[in-house]
Length: 277
Image: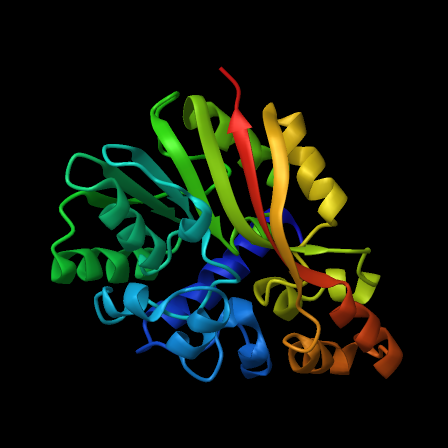
């Protein structure tokens, strides 16, 4: 797959999710055990990765599709009046939670490359009366945001889907004001995946094949210019991904032992970093 093939596959898969009524997974049915693609219901999946009952109850219906792997707003320490940017905003769940934190004097911008997701997010914003939230069409490698205009960037299980993560971090650095920060929830690897899985479209949109090693992920943040790069928490995704990876690789001729190795190498992390002044 080349980069454009990857983007097209991701856009198509997430577009299908956006036009459904929630709870369905990105990619094939086999990925429904994935935290990236929800669980049996969106709220169950979201509670499992750190969202509170109070947060979920505050959202417009349809804003939570259960697509995340963490709750980036939980570590964001957002302040009233700040400008927040959400990379890969989906149906708007993290944008709406951020909007409550920054208040009417603040502003939240969601960027997503999937037209159906943007339409759904805008409908949710209208239903919830979120006058301080806007959604823009764009790829996270080429953000439709001006230089030095954002105080904080959040992202939830999206950067792992990008074929050019270094460019994503470079763009994030560009749009942040000096002293601005990123708070990211994402999927990374403890070791490289087998080549067969790396080339699988299903594994890519299921947040498995697109993930890079933890070391490379952190190094790319540093290379973009970020300082104080630190992992706030990390949790093994083994068990959660077992069913997904087993079915993804079923047609790839990979052994059960290799499936277990893949599952045990996938972790969910929360990362913070600063754009130095």
